[in-house]
Image (cartoon, protein in one colour):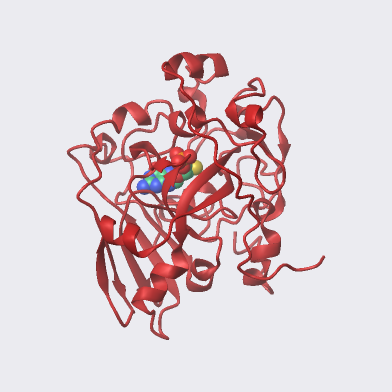
Amino acid sequence: MAKRKHGSVPLKKDEITPKPLYDSRRKFLKQMGFLGMGAVLASCAPAPAATSAPPAEPTGGLATLTGLTDELGNPLTDYNAVTGYCNFYEFTTNKEKVDEQAEDFVPEPWSVEVGGLVNNPRTFTMSEILETFDQQERIYRMRCVEGWSMVIPWLGFPLRQLLEEVEPTSEAKYVAFQTAMLPDVMNGVNSMMFPFPYLEGLRLDEALNDLSLLATGLYHESLPPQNGAPIRLVVPWKYGFKSIKSIVKISLVTDQPYTMWNTIAPQEYGFYANVNPDVDHPRWSQGTEIRIGENQRRDTLYMNGYADEVEYLYEGMDLAVYY
Ligand code: MTE
């Protein structure tokens, strides 16, 4: 297979569809078959099998109407599904309630501390981030480890650009990320069910790949609270749990950092978490997925369809071992 240049972005940069003008989100979700499903869905925690993934819904939505697609021809997932069906355990484990629970989360003022093994440690305010880094539109597929997926038009900038500003030293091998912990507004962090703060990590070369995005918006607007306002990671070739939300701290480190899911259940949620239909979750197959808005399961793509851009990162590694 002909390799594309590393760092090329396989993205269609057509005009992003404006968010739909639906007034009644709940009515919409009901029509889409979402309401009432929360209790049976697999969570990223030790969870029921993939047979409990979202049920079939009629194909449709604004993306289909406008014909806007990713580079493989997949229509965008409807705005109301992207923002109404979320995983953000600091608020609640009920995917349909995250938006309600996060209503009082006002992500400002906000700053992101970037430090560790770098020459220029720096704390960026959100305004500095938006002024310093040009925001790009990128349409990425997102595949949750639970077996559902979406196609989302993000706004953001390559993580690499932020790392270049702080200049990692030669000892830096990994990048560790941390989510805010705000018990006053995040009801879930008081539940003691999970060892918050939510932590994630990438190997430095993964972080420098052009696909690794720091997202500040979606569907042409600032990130809604439930999707990780005001800034989150998006790593489209990895399961969604790697895409940590509402980041307050980024540290360059020597050793592979602890991550929340890997700490809770290392046999189920690996550090690498590359989307791989050939490596099943211990309790369900990863061979297929439900694309939200579609009727039938579809085959899961190796590296979520981004192999040409990222497989060089894993040359010589047994991905059943480094899952
Ligand atoms: N980040 C934090 N801080 N807390 C979370 O619970 N959930 C992860 C990831 N990032 C999560 C998080 C999981 S499991 C997924 S699938 C994606 O966010 C979901 O992103 P979305 O809700 O914007 O679709």
